[in-house]
Image (cartoon, rainbow, N blue to C red; front, side, top):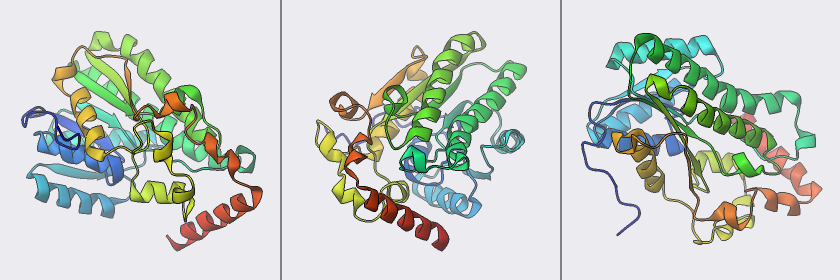
Length: 294
């Protein structure tokens, strides 16, 4: 069987309403598309409303589903509450929260400013906390049951990884929150699980993370025992299962989908030890030039 094929039956998410943070592009978009194909109504969120609208229109055309774009910033709790209210107004009760919004960059930690470190912490950890708390309080106050939170973490959430320390720190916090609330909020009918993906390249994110010819110099597929990177549909299949009722007895789990990468060598970016100081200078200049253009 082709591992890029769709896994669940067509109506597996029929009647479900899902919120996907960071759903306008990349892996968030891939998961959203499959959710729509399985019958769910999906609200996609980010700070870029134009990108969200374009994605929503594209996915509705491709799937025939209902995709609702909502602009907000995960770093601000009141904006999360407003996003939830808008989604409920549009679709009715929300069943599933997928905390997918993230930020990352590679750098020696001593080169990071406190603000740069905080930026990643605020998006990944604080953002996931804000969404989880707002949705959880809403569900508990309303007495709504059979709800699911799915968090996207990373394998270096438990191993750590050099050169992506803010991301590793934030993702470790999200993983701890996942496991903690899986126990505490189970009595309210809320399940928590997480996915830890290995390399699933997306053009935007990976171009920013490894700009220029660094993608060729540091071919992450060579670190994977299966000798390939992940296909987006593989991740979408797993996410769809974990938010569906088929996984009703799965709670507090983190599922790794990385082709065995972390077992082969803990710390996804430890190989960057080989980069000389001069190349770090060039990399910083390239990243700054990309920011100034965008």
